[in-house]
Amino acid sequence: MVTLREIVEDPKSRSGKRVRLKAKILGRKGCDKIESYMVTRSDVTVSDGTACVYSDPITFELRGKTVEAERTVEVRDNKAHLSRPKILRVIEGERRYVRT
Image 1 (cartoon, rainbow, N blue to C red):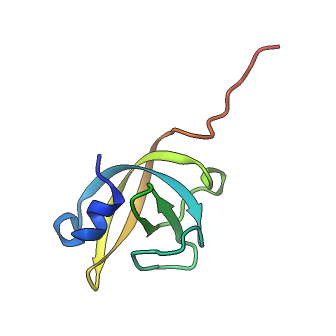
Image 2: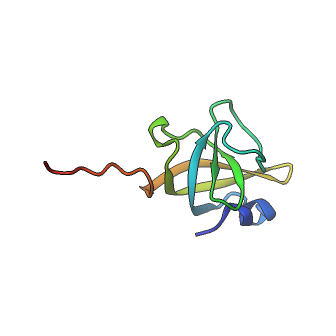
């Protein structure tokens, strides 16, 4: 697992590679300082506490939740963008069913 800070500091070393990370899906404007580029207006920001970057759109129901996911790092002008997210598991905000 990598951190977003590691990707932001050296995006070219991971360009085109799938990475696994744990991050919170914040929506389009979730951070004060976004250290990547937006591809479409549907992109969302994700943050792991070390950095905040744009990612391809993710299911609306997962916004505000922390997930473990695999993504592909794309690089343009030495800035990263996370594409093709594959959600492996929801870490925070999981629905818990209680029998009554």
